[in-house]
Length: 87
Image 1 (spheres, one colour):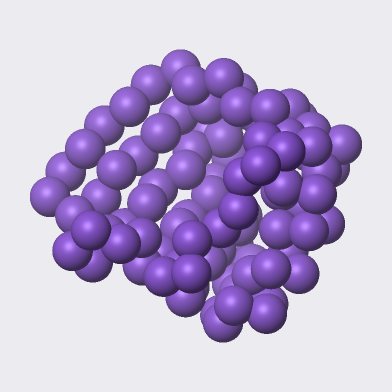
Image 2 (cartoon, helix red, strand yellow):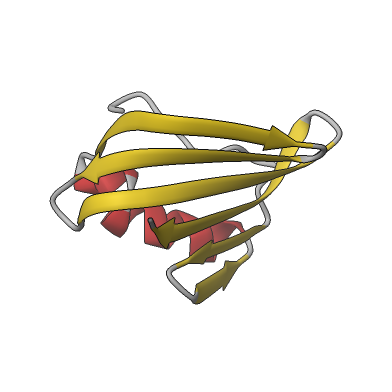
């Protein structure tokens, strides 16, 4: 994930009940807990419904390690919201 970045269209984000709104808040979270934590994701499942895609994964990083679920909500062809929970 060294070249990964969060999409500009992402405006709302929730991680284990903590809600982040706006690019600056999301970027700060990502720098500390996601991309900045040198995460590695191993996908274990996938489900798609209308405007949502859910990915079950084993997540390993310097910040958190364990099973997680990533739910992406789309508005057209853009990611509008991302929710991450422990699986």
